Length: 177
Image: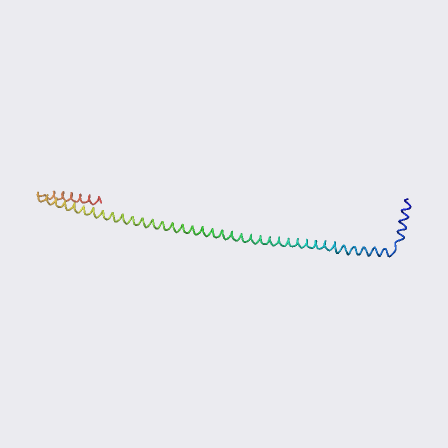
């Protein structure tokens, strides 16, 4: 049986004609054309679409990255401006505080000067009152001395004592101011 199969194969191999080879070659070419049209071309189209899709995704990712960098740069600029504005506000507040301090000090000095002037005027008024009171005492003492002189005749020594006592009283009253 083994020999019969080998013999049949050998006869079949000898029996292949050129027409069969051409026919099989033609069928193979038709098969390749059909595969190319119905299998290979759609497969290549799918691959091309996939390639375009991936390229498009890469482009979009790059655009998003660039937009993100642009936004980051804008945020950095905004932060820088915010810091500058905050620094300007702090500086303005510092200047305003300094101006207010100077105004308060000037106001306090003016108030102190006003109080000082008022005190000087009060002292001057009291001094005038004291002088008026002293004049009244001097006049009163003069009248008293004159009345005592008239009442008794004074010796020169008595007159000196009286004048010294009078001068002493005037100095005491003048020193009390």
